[in-house]
Image (tube, rainbow, N blue to C red):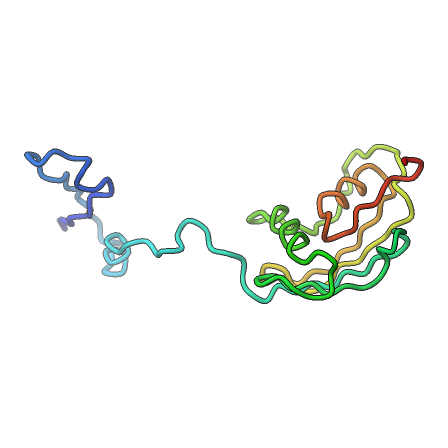
Length: 166
């Protein structure tokens, strides 16, 4: 039997001075030196959440949005920059939509039920790299799902009023 003293994860303030720290006993042939080292090593300083990798770069091309929003814009994040009209806001919008294991630029699922409302002729294409992954996504405002998907990424995509709304 192998007996290993593991660090007290609650710290010295959580136990009384009269009692020693509890001991846990690990047994088994599969216990390796690497496992022992990982059990006693301190977690890395960035353990809570690591920032997205540097070098995020997107190209946004907008058509038929009106109000002078049409055009092609470059966006860099961490640090924010490029020709986009609001690089810091655009980076923040994509950061808000980024979740572990999900694609922030994923299309509307084929089986989604969408309202039959028309948000106007605006379209956009976003290409580049985000969180170390390639991006090639298209956006439109042809129905309620498309409008919601577009609006979720404002100001990466320009704010557009739906057709028929002041």
